[in-house]
Length: 459
Ligand code: SAH
Image (cartoon, rainbow, N blue to C red):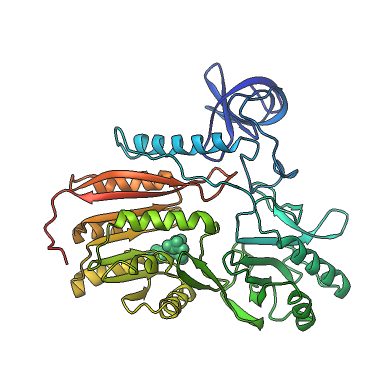
């Protein structure tokens, strides 16, 4: 087999990034946009010793699980990988993937994985988007989405999973740039001003935030643009973010306010949160509430417990837990997020929470060794790469009765659960997947570990 060969293949399974996988004489082909059950004509794009990548050229027999995708750009845009798969099958696939990772990577023989909590209406669910700006081949200023694995902009302002307001905001910005001759950033040359527009919406409050990421420190006509943006109902925050580095990282560290607040407010359940441009906030609020309620349920709080929450962001889960705990300590690495967390605790009148700025893997061991802190319940919600081993070791030494592990990556979740259960003191009770990212291959999970023999007296 060689590059550009045209082959026929039946797709059997789905890979980690949502791609279809089929075999020819035992040799696996990874085919983007192909789904299990498809029989397809594919063209080899990259041939390796033990596998190859291929492009879907023609569907010979479409899978029975296919559905008509809502977005015409679903194949060229890198945002959604499995929009052409029926939603029911998406959930089935995700549940299966979590179970397989726990078995293969985690070494659990028969893990209890509950059915995925899905959405009733899995569209327009995202409360945040970061749109890159650039120029098309024919010289127009464009904004849209990066094509998968590249920085080519697929023009489009009307996203099937994004907030409906994005379109109006983006078109207004494009018009403004054309009128004023404002240059979009050119990555190759490192020139031009506007890099990205970060748009956030508080779904419970209707508040809208626009933060323009610029290669500079000021935006010509910012006040007039503010007038236009604030004519959109719900607009409460317009700011600039300075990013003058030649980097793939979207946001710089400095935020310059232009009009309104530098944050928006949103609500999850009974709790209000103020969210700054630089802080992490879950992107799917409807599902976030299900996720947090599950985490709270798994924490099994009765009122007096001491709880540590690592990777706490703006304190969203911490405040959920604080409703039913004695004391909650949160740890987070981003300074603005910790500021938000402290403000959010005050805003909601919680006196029983405290936040520490720093790396979980440094703060926790230090506090444990120096101050002899303890925990009845430990909650963690790390980024994709999972927990640092120093962090896991300290968690084990602290002997909490329960560990609730919230994760956006089943593979690193399985790896870390294996470490936590290795010495036999903890038992994996159950895992609840939550579909935070419909039409993408991602799946969020809440796992509950309980301690078999605990030596720490309860509070
Ligand atoms: N629990 C929060 C945030 C989860 S996202 C929520 O649901 O909103 C993970 C968070 O971990 C981010 O806020 C990120 O800034 C933070 N983080 C990343 N690495 C970290 C580290 N080593 N120590 C502490 N926090 C970290």
